[in-house]
Figure 1: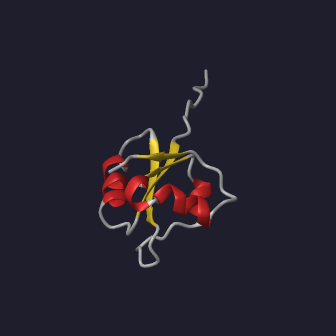
Figure 2: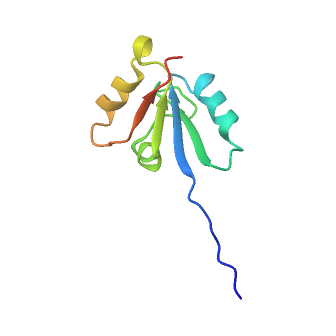
Length: 93
């Protein structure tokens, strides 16, 4: 009898902050080894090591931004990429 593979698709998560140096990178590091998720991180600033792109947003099933209240991360994403519709969660940190 052949065994069937029960591979489960992992949720793709993108963490976004301003510079992609501290918060989003730390979140990526924390979740990197979690088998439930594929994770990447990016920054909104032009100097970010990994800048947010349309391709990254389309890759993600869900996007977590660090701070809408003070840094307007969600607003900036929507302004720069109005054609990409992904769930965006504000962590407010």
